Each structure stands twice: as C-alpha cells, then as structure tokens.
Image (tube, rainbow, N blue to C red; front, side, top):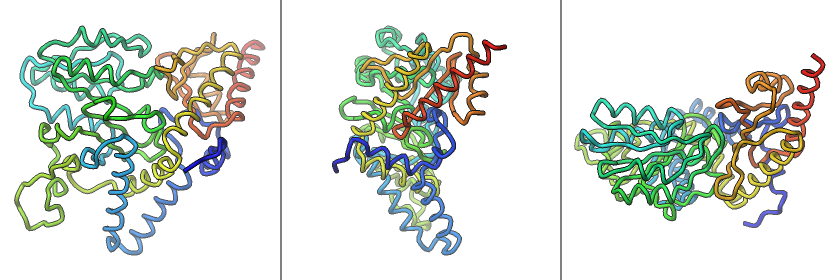
Amino acid sequence: MSYPSDWWHEFREQMPVVTRWAYFDHAAVAPLSRHVVSAFQNFLVDASENGTVNWMDWRNTLEDLRAILAQMMNAELSEIALIRNTTEGICIVAEGLPWQQGDNVVLPDGEFPSNFYPWLALEKRGVDVRRVTAIDGKLNPHDIDAACDDRTRVVAASWVDFKTGWRNDLKMLAEIAHAHDALFFADVIQGFPVLPLDVRETDIDFAAADGHKWMLGPEGAGVFFCKEEHIDRLTPKGVGWNSVKHAGNFSNPKLDLKPTASRYEGGSYNMAGLLALHASLSEFSWIGVDHLNQRLRDVSDELCEKLQSADVTVISNRSDAHWSGIVSCDIPGVSPGRFRKQMLNRHVALNHRAGYVRLSPHVYTSTEDIERLIDGIEVLRESESAG
C-alpha cells in the first residue's frame, strides 16, 4: 500500500492523548489508540453478553497476531510465542537452558532489570554472570568478545539502551556469541517495531518484547521469538494445557509438546490484552516498518535540532548506526526530576533516567508537541532566573 508523506496525520487522529498532552514518554508506557480501546471494548461486551461462545473467534485473531509479528520480524510462525511481557521471554531462555556449573553469561552493565535478574538468579546454579562496562549505554562489541570464553553459553543485550537510546548492532553481537559457540538473546522492547528487525539477517537466537511501549499496546501482552532450531533445546517451565499438540482435549493425559514456540504459552492467554495488541499492530503492518522508521527518524531529528537551538545538550548518539526513538538530554542547571514535574503541569509528559531528561516521541508526534516542550524549557529558565 502506498502512503502520502503526511500519512501520520491520520494516525495521530487515532490517538486521544494528543487532545491534552504532548506525549514524550513512549519508552515508559505508551498511550492507547482508539483502535486499541475499541478492541478492548468489543471484547468486554462480547464476553459479558456471550461468555465464551465466540472464544474460537478470539483465538483465530490471536493466530493472525502471530502472523503479523512473524511478518514484521521476518520469522516463521513456528518461532513466535505470545507471552505476557519481556521478563517472561527472558525467563523462558534463562530457566530453560541446560546449564552446568562453571558456565557463564555475558551482558552489558546497566541493563534494565528484566534483562539482568533472570541471569543473576542462575548464580545459585554455579553460573557466572559477567557484566561488561557500557558508559551511557554505549556498548563496545569488542568488550563483549573479550569477556567470552569457551564456557560462555549466552550473550544477552538490549537492542536499545533504555537510558540514552544507544542502539546496538544485533548482527555483530550475534556473530560474537556464535564465534564462541554461545547463543544470543536480544531484549527488543525499546525498538520493535518502529526500528526494522530482521531475525534472519541479524541471526539472533532469541528475542522478547512487551507491547506497551513502541507497539502502542497494553501492558501484559508481548512476543517471544525463538529460532526454530532451539525450540527443543529449551525445557518449558510453565507447561500447561496449551503447551501440547492436543490442546483443548482435556481427557488426553499425554505430555506431547507442540513442536513450535507456542509450547511456551502454557495456559490461558491474556485474551483482552492480546486482542488489543492485535488492533495496534494491524495498523502498523498496513503502514509498514519502513514508513514508521523514517517518520520516527524525522520526528526525533526535529526534536534534537530544536533542543540544541534551545541550548540543551543532546546526550543520545544520533548516527545512522546507533540512533533510536529515545532522546536523552541535559539541561544545564535543571534537575531532571523537577523538570519532569513542572512539565507535567504544562501537559507535557516525559521522564528521566540516569541523571538525564529522557524524551521518547512516536510517529504521531507533531511539531506543535515539540514546540510546547521547548516553550516549557524557556519558561522554566525564566522562572529560575527570576528566582
């Protein structure tokens, strides 16, 4: 489908948040679109009026969601599991591999807790967790390589650093892991799907993301990718009625696991959440990742230019290889926490991490949103000067 250059205006009209807020906090929790709200409402009405009569219709929609996710990642249907959150996806790997005492995991220092605690928990099984320094999220792949040895079983890293938005080269990290006969896990929550992710081209082994950030979905509905050749390598820890080939035949006691990543889905789905995520990603898939990516680049570039014009220091790397939708900055003499509170009073939503103001626009963010942010900076400076 061909879209005009201003397609995002129609997209913006589907975001009720814009009537009140200039929203720059998608790296935390995103607002929901009208499509997502309608999906929630339709499910609630259907469930209240019909119980489970239409359960198979809901289930079929989930399979369409699986197909959308597979297409957006260039994965096979068999490699996609519908999960609750990123943590669950990481735990499927961390708890499912056959670890031996003396094995090790290599990951950057300063990872989001979801991509740290599950690996740290393996220490009680004799697994060494090796952390590589990454100042302001900037990971040097050569440092990862130097930390690996013949007992490295997994290299784990975020695609995009949650503090400064530094984007790692997944292909290079996967190559390093594989050179040491290790596996590579990528936490892709801060990039997918507004940054292109091709699991074939990058050759990553596992990936996970929740839908409540850049997918504009609800919390508690996400995706886990497992390369097909590793499906039998992981022992499912949450085995349930939905893990077996004969799911739904409750009189069959045989433990005959599905041959696909859906074996990790265990029991009942977060049906409402996944139906809502389907509504959001259906819109994204029609637009196309390339359009989303280019629009996000344009928006974040405009944001950076206006921040710099307002004498704000942009911390995030904006090169082609490492940019993302997260723009962290330093406003000299201004406390990030206090700035956030004052901007909320002006209906500008943003956040702060690691001592920096963190801004995370989306494809529907407008020039007017950015100008409201910049005006807030100027007003704050004037008030502090007067004080």
